[in-house]
Image 1 (cartoon, rainbow, N blue to C red):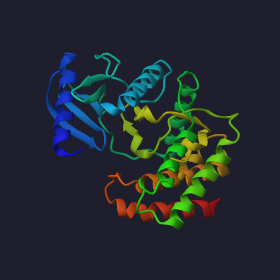
Image 2: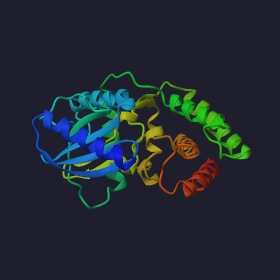
Image 3: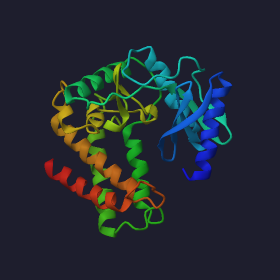
Image 4: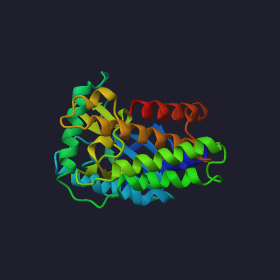
Length: 277
């Protein structure tokens, strides 16, 4: 967010906490992108603040977290002293979460896989109306196919991404017999190492598909410890995920830091992943 919008988002987070009877004298910005994550002190609550256009996504994330709390899932929890709902303050959607102090060591691949298997087991025990991962691909394809939305993408790279996204999505999504509810983006940035063990966060990306779609977001060594995973399918999903990543980078309004580097790097990663298949 731009500085002026960030200041308003911080105030929205502070107000939402105060309305729940929590002291929020100080605010630490933990993450700043199109949405922000704030640590509020001294109540030590984590506020996730999104523009009101993301209200539906924020409400979905809260619903998933609320259901997973009863399924013993290894996920970050909503704050227990607040209402489990999204609050609208100013032009922002605010949800309040438990803050977990980070533990310094890296998460070992076996522990990462164990957390993901337990998370998938919990997701099988809840029922929410979540989109199929192919819907995410369709959104990416729409941006790739529209030169006005991706004006700097060359014709050759546009065709390459279109064919890769469409082809892999059709292959992976053809047999849905083994599909289940997924995290959607369980990459290392969404897995916290805490004193309670590894916990997944950012549940708004929840979707349906094969577990290999989730596995492909993590380090490659994790798949070796995930019982029953299909190695070839994981490779296909990894290539698809890099194609999705690359498609987002070519959007005209993408604001990822060092975007030019990741535009080239993303395409290279797609080609390398396809070669492995």
